[in-house]
Length: 162
Image (spheres, one colour):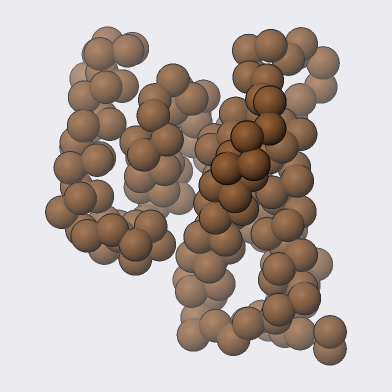
């Protein structure tokens, strides 16, 4: 690979900038730290070795999220045994929660709600962008957001914000 530049950033700068986003997507999807690390690495390996062309920095970020989701789905299909984060002792697992405190609450929801709620509230993606990333219609995303908020409200009580 030639030293690729991604909107003024080299590969290492891209990893530093998007590591929390990609890591959060992987952990949210797999609920297992070591499996998430594998998918995290595979996502950035694909960026490094493929060095695709991007239209914008937003396109780069959306590509990383989509690849991370695909890597996690591929990992799940392998049917490997999984341990949940509840089974892991609190011995230094450093999950990033500074941007979105609701991340941990999302673990109790189905994946289809986790992804859209995470992308909308934690990564600040609008409905149309989430639809493109997940290859779903905007109306489907709106429905998943509404139902996901309802499920969170049932689980944790209180008001949900539209």
